[in-house]
Length: 151
Image (tube, rainbow, N blue to C red; front, side, top):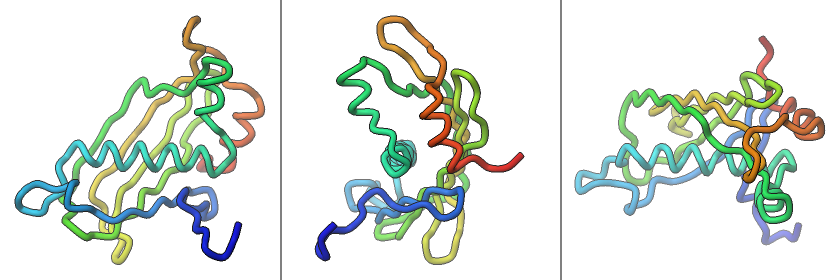
C-alpha cells in the first residue's frame, strides 16, 4: 500500500469490525434526517467491508463458483435519527457460526460520542445458487471466528 492509499474497508478492533462513513446529503430527507432504508445500506456496506477485511471475497465466489452469502433474516431496531454530516461507524460482530447459517450483530453509532442510532440482528446463509443452502466451508468458518463474540 502506498502512502497515498487508505483502507476503505474499515478495520478490525479486537473481534469487532469497524466501518466508518459520513452521512451525505443524498442519504437524508428535506429535514436533514437519514431516511430509514439507508441504515440497511450502511449495514450492508459494513458487512461487505467486514468480509473483505477478513479475506472473504464474495465477488470471487459468486463469479467463479456461483456461491455466496445471502441474508435470510434481518431485524432492525431504529433508536434515533442520524443527521447530515454525522460521522458514523458500523460495528459488526459474529454472534454464531452454524453449519449453514451465520448470525451477526451490527450497530450503527455516532463516531464522536458512541450514541447508537440502529441495531441489527442478521442471519445469513451460505448458498450454491443452483442448489440452495450448503455447509459453510471450513476455511470460511475459521476466518469468521476472528470476529466471533464469546458466548
